[in-house]
Amino acid sequence: MKLLWLKEIIGDAYTEDMDAAACQAIGKDFVARADFNAKNTRVKELEAQVGQLEEAAKGHAKQLEELTRKIGELEQQNKADKAAFEKELANIRLTSAVDAELTAAGAKNNTAVRALLADYLKDAKIEDGKVVAKINNESITLAAKIEAMKKDAATDFLFGNPGGKL
Image 1 (spheres, rainbow, N blue to C red):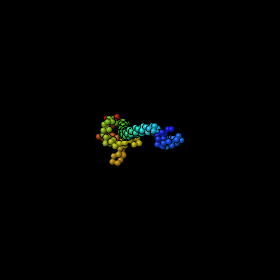
Image 2: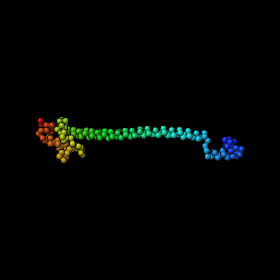
Image 3: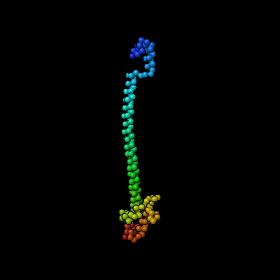
Image 4: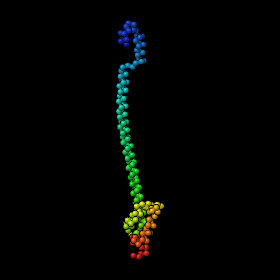
């Protein structure tokens, strides 16, 4: 007899068959205390792990947010650096094209001629391989401006004489 406590309640009418039936019924509907405690301990351990994982996930979410913000900042910096580089490159190309045209036109001092052309060159761009600037809504090429300077008595001395006259 396994359930002696039940025999004490029922008395002498309690038999081995009743004991076996009661044990079987109790086994179907109830869990042993040791099994219950083991499962309950395991549930608490798993709940603690879930809490730790949730905290770790929050930490990773903060890291992800920080990295996303940093990537955004770097993208903005990259765009600004690219724009500055392209502006500098365009300026170098323009300066190079102006120097090439001044040299081809026989300028004695490119720096001095560029100084006189400063107002013209501040809005100048390279279009179709030529230096062009808009003055009074009219496109004027650098070659035309140089020819005008060669013909002007105030600036003709800046250019060499093709005939060799001084």
